[in-house]
Structures are given as structure tokens and as C-alpha cells.
Amino acid sequence: MTPAQAAAVLVVPSLVTNIWQAAVGGGLLGLARRLWPLLAGICIGTAASVVFLPRDNNGRATVWLGLALAIYAALGLVKVEFSVSNHAETWLGLLMGAATGAITVATGIFVMPGTPYIQSMEFDRDRLVQALGLSFSVLPIALAAALAYTRHVQTSLASPSIVALVATLIGMGLGQPTRGKIKAETFRLCFFVGLMFLGLRLALRGLL
Image 1 (tube, one colour):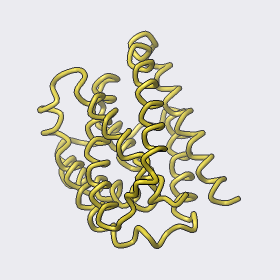
Image 2 (cartoon, rainbow, N blue to C red):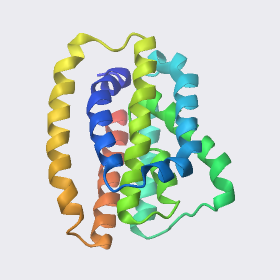
Image 3 (cartoon, helix red, strand yellow):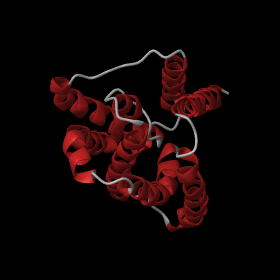
Image 4 (cartoon, rainbow, N blue to C red):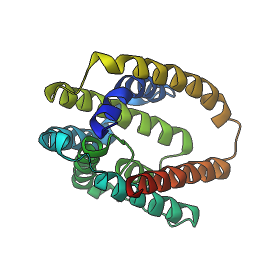
């Protein structure tokens, strides 16, 4: 399917599960205050890029995104860490949010560069997951508005979206208690290995 169709399928499961993920742990208002530049940038980038949504179905954006994910995962596995100073969070958050919104519109993938940026803010493990949940809650809302504007939201996508929602809820139910039982280093390893496989799969799928 095209990136627009894939994105439409993911809107409902992404919104439901990430609102759940963001709400767990408390302190959501304070987290939102710190992340507001990123969230605002996501909305701006998504809105500005919606005009290009129907044009990039040739897989090039997916190849570059996959390579970026794989490189980021490789850096994470060898423990090359990034950090963002507090005074840079406003302008850099807006920039990273806008880039994330644009890439989401082009590919239907929510991860880059928002995920590495949030990780560079040096949250602890549980707060990191909550911060990702918050950003991934805003993304589907902005994306749904973009898809509705370009008329990519169709009733034929309802069935795969429901299947994806059920599968994701099962995964969330299993993942949350598991996260509390594994070591931080194991969590980190699984996180980056998962990103590595996702990136390589996207890149190879776009090339082949």
C-alpha cells in the first residue's frame, strides 16, 4: 500500500495506545510543558507537508528513512549518546518536530527524528516511554487531519485498522508489565535492535 494508506491504517491504533502510554506514570502536564516545542513543530511540519503526500509513492523516502533508522540504531548499540542543553530545547524541538511531521506525512512512520531527539533529553526509562507516548499521541491527530484533507481516509481501511488496534492493545498489555521486570540495559538493547531491524527492512523493501 502507499504511505498515505499505511498512515491511515495506523492512525487509530497509534492514537489509542499512545494516549494510554502517555497517561501512565503521572506528571503529564510537566512533561507537556517541556515537550511543547516538539509537539508544536509536529503540527506545523505535518500541515506544511500535506500538499506533498500524494506525490511520493516511489519508495525513495522510505529507503532514506530506513537507512537513517539503521544508522541511529547502530550508534545506540555502540553507545554513542546525544544530549540537548535546556536552552536549545525550544528551537531544536520546533525543528525536530517539524522534520518528524514531514517524514510522517511522506512515509507513514512516526519514529524519525522525534525518537532520537526525545532520547537525547535524558529522561529515565519510564519517563522516556511516557514522552514518546505523548509525542506519538499528537502525531496521529495531526496526521488524521492531513489525511482527511487529502481524502485518504476511506472506509475500506477500517478493517485493517481494527486488526492493528487489537494487535497493538495486546502488545501494550504484555509490554507494560514486562518493562518493569527487565534491566535498563536489556531494555536499551531491545529498543535499538528493534529499530535496526525496522530500518533495514524499510530500506531493503524500498530498494527491491
